[in-house]
Amino acid sequence: MDEALKENIYGALEQVIDPELGIDIVNLGLVYDVDLDESGTAKITMTLTSMGCPLAPVIVDQVTAALADIPEVKQTEVDIVWTPPWTKDKMSRYAKIALGVT
Image (cartoon, rainbow, N blue to C red; front, side, top):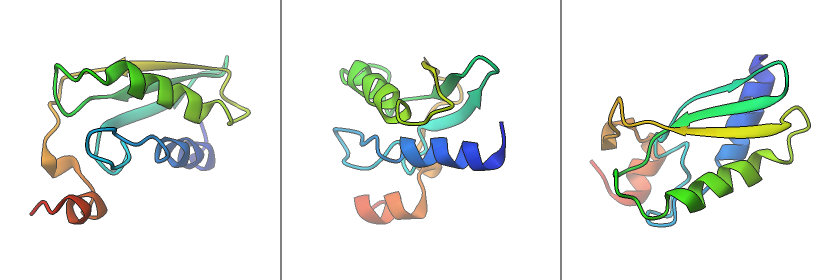
């Protein structure tokens, strides 16, 4: 996958807002990796802020919807992982400022 397409995918994922925190999943540092195979399947490796997150299905649906407008993406697979665990250190400077995290 070329860098422009990867940036396009990350840009689309910035439209997915964590419903509890009100910040997108990219700036929260929840997206660990994106990949697109030859058949057009986008694999998004990500985590959530907590293991028991009741909104996981909503976020997965929003990821799929966000990538649907990218012509190269024919299908989306979201792999929720817990290693490495998410911490506030993974957040972008923007997210930290927006949430008042130091």
